[in-house]
Picture (tube, rainbow, N blue to C red):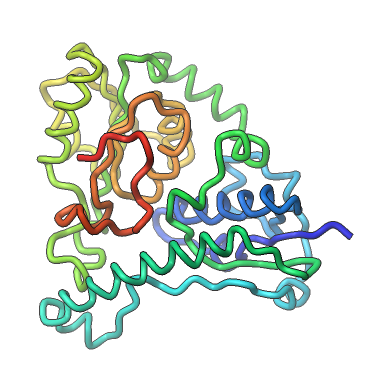
Amino acid sequence: MEKKIFTDNGRLKFDSWNQALGNKIQHLLFVINYADKHNIKPCISIDSNLDKLFELSSMKEFIDDDIYKNIPLVYGEKDAFETNRLNKYFKSFFRSSRLKKSLKRSYQEDILESKLLTTNFDYPAIRVIGHFWHYDLMPDLTTFIKYCPIKKELVDLVKLTYPTLESSKSVAVHYRGTDFKNHLRQIFKTPICLPEKYYKSAIKKAEEVLGEDIEYHLFSDELDLLVDIFKDKKVIVHRDNLYTDWCALYLSKNMISSNSSFCWTASLYNKTNLIQPKGGYNHSDPKNPIPYGFGIPGAYQI
């Protein structure tokens, strides 16, 4: 009997304003990495918005909810930012201690999940729950393409619409605003959205590496802010849906990345020059990154 690992239905069904696409992709990438390393079949038992981005038909195995729930859950990730209502009410009073605990949890999470990745379970089928936001848990490019090819029609559309995107003189730039201005303020003293100085430093690094004749492709949920930062540069502003944006970010050869999971997953592959915010969420204290495995080898950390 062929062994199988199933994705988390609860995660794939989650429907927020931004579709939680980055978190879903992280989860999927871990599942296919585990499957490939253990020579078992990765399975998805429901349809989700990931089907708008990837060709996943080979992984689909529809089963009843009762059967799914009886599949052994071999790992459930704990929230590195777990807080209670009291902590949220007294944000500044608890902030320092909660940050220390979050740093520790993120580090321990990386260790536990790295061990999970190499552990073989004696069950015909297993399932896992988690974001798995650490670089060393991610599959290589060959494994990614093997299981999760991006829909051809989407790739063709992006290439036709933005013919210069893959040029060596083009740089994709991503900024996550909106909810990041207040997200996790019970943990972090400053907002986790990246400050203007990061992008100014990233521009300097990009032009140091590629020269000044760069075309910047801008992606954001607050485009006006990003356009203002790049007002003196040659820019192309992307105003597409999430799936087109993710595909375009993936196809770009050079990138100034944000600290969102959406952008992070798109920056994992296909990059000649990658600039990352050092520290991830904890960019104001970059010696203590959150997530612990946020940094991508070979990237310029700013």
